[in-house]
Image (cartoon, rainbow, N blue to C red; front, side, top):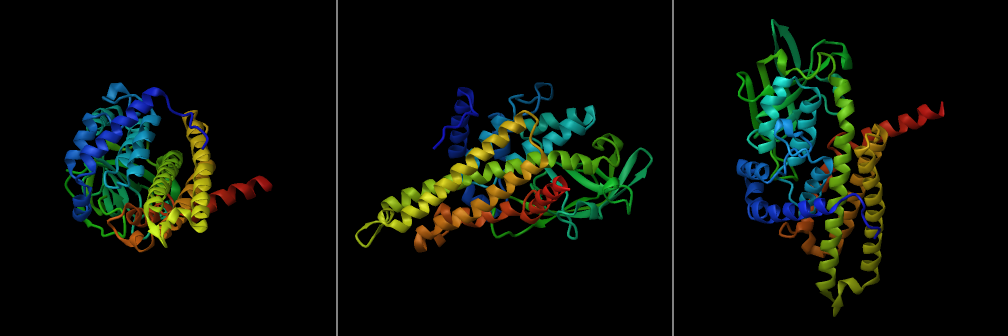
Length: 383
């Protein structure tokens, strides 16, 4: 395998502390969280205390000011461990950047320090029952009322929805104007008119709370508008590149973990008087998965490098997500087959990984949306 060159000794030391945190604060409780459909708020506070949240947030807002690579370490280690419950990455590298880049100074001072220490949990609400990837069709609306906006609508598939204290909500401020009317708002979950629906039952990601959210006359002060009214679509398009890169990062780390589990299992498992790993089919399948993972690892790491240099464009990010998430689903299926019947048992991490992997092809824009974006760019160049 080609050596990775992204990380310093300091990152390696941080990785060890993240692994220790997962072993102590997540592993013993994750099975119960899967039954509950939500993680404990305690793990968020402990993660904040350990410096695992909002690694990119500057010191002036209470953050570690450590940079995106430290968040990459957290994402990778959670994916490798197979624990999907605490959606730290959404909070730290999707919600927090929107606030950092677009919110007023008052809003930054109000929310970022609390997000860093884990006392406030963040979510982002874009999808609706009738509008998923088609953001221009959202029906949630916001009308001006003096110095405030009045927010009405419904959101669905919202990660961290049951726990969130602050939610970025995409709403239409100019009905009928499509992208030009989309505005992003910061909503305090204690505001009158905001309601959470029940946790949604999913086929995977059982410990990660996903909810419907309802906004019935929610009053949002102008100071909690991100940027200016109508800026929302451009802001979303700018930030989605990082979100899609993150999907690629998590997918490759998960695929590498699955391969490691499979090598260990097939080496120990006996069939017809010898280890399963000695059969040619097993060896060939392991070789296929290892090669796929190695190719994707180098592509994803290159995308991370470009992102750190502010040179990762939307198309490269889409390719990263498309390639990595498709490969994850394919490779975990190949590996599960080598476990035989035990691969179908939830007591084995491979079974949970198989179930959880499917979501990666939907989150951050579906596989079909990625193909649309990539093909459109190719055809535009050819004209």
